Image (cartoon, rainbow, N blue to C red; front, side, top):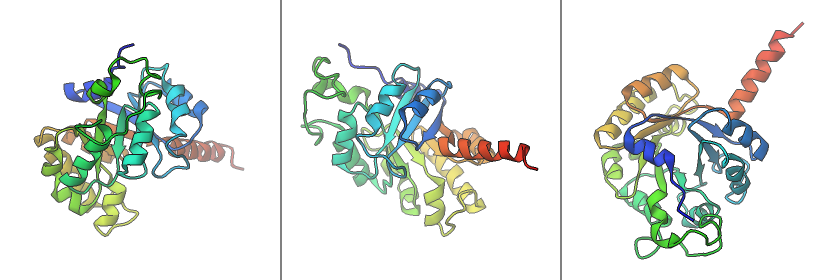
Length: 254
């Protein structure tokens, strides 16, 4: 069996915009439904959702028949969590709270087998298709897409150094955490935050890396896209459900 191709990683290399959706519900039926909606990628979130690394495996299996990439976010830049996600079959990861080049190198090491990294070796996992992929340990890194989050003022100052780390495939800006770091908690669309994000997107592009972003502010997303953001999360499952539930109730309000 051949190593599955990572179409999301290839698209970023080719400079093709990828539109995604954030998923926080650990429900395979919900993920399967969303996988058929035409998005390029779905983010399975274990950082701020009620799911852990093992819970993502049935979600990835639910999305597998569809033309969509699943990206998984661990709770932290933790090699144990990352190892578990890779063994469960993740090929694309979004690592939160990467502050500098050293932490980016730690993330790279976590997704690569020795001697290039520290990923633990196991033969019978979903990642290797239970041993069916020939030479998996030697070639797995070729199709792993490693994205790192820039979400503090410290990380902003280190964008160029982070982007220069071999093995990093993209930098993602998190406006919510960045807003808190800038002294505007709960205001991800604050003018100062928006200006910092747009500047960061441009700097990431100049450094030769694809930039990503998530915000529910659609005009902000348009600005980021115009600045060069390449992988864009345009909404969340919880946000879509709540807004539409409220809107439908409003239609029938006495």
